[in-house]
Length: 288
Image (cartoon, rainbow, N blue to C red; front, side):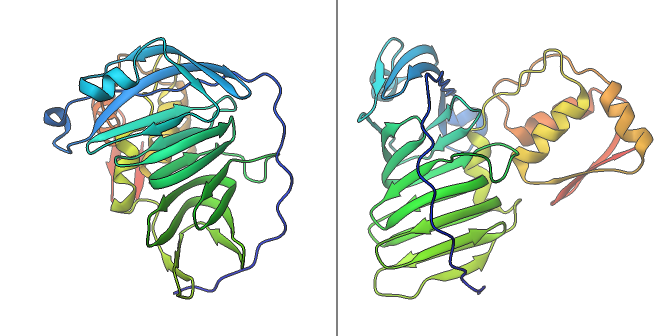
């Protein structure tokens, strides 16, 4: 158990002008993953309080019918996922919002959402303490990111907030809490809040990798790809020398990793290079 720290007062919501929101969801069968997860890729263009579904990849059954190409997604709309279903939204400023199975969430604005039940994950980029931030309203209080990777789970029992990187503030009618990198804060009815430790590469985050947007290899270096893979897997990226880092920077990558999880893509891409490497539980090591 860790100590709870009281956060500072929240700033007002950063007002956006016209935003372009891209929503990416991709669909793959459980047989391909053996994880029982279905993902869909969407691209959405929207302005404040209004979103329009612009592009759809995949979709099957009732889920594919509900989220079909051409549908409008507006403020106030509710997105619901069932067993084995998931969505990944790419927002205007580069934030990734991922919606797990058996989740219901309402879109209130480009940077504000109401999580009624289930679990979501947000990656708001590499910049901590940036202007503005996502707001996630839940029955147990409001969660606001200070940056940059975190999950929020809401149920009838309480609220569960895990921080992979950066910091998150949680406010309800009684208290104000702050959870930092490596902490998992749990609020329960009639109980004191608790904080446990959680590693960035913990199995808890596996569902997040299943919904990671595909990485476009076009005009990218091996170093670009490795940074993405390290961030998505929660592993530390290490180079045994400046020479090995420069080599990764000068090496181009080709092909496609569409349909692969970040971990699978990492293995596949490195296998096509002459780079020596080691992939451990908590780190990726590139050698000379």
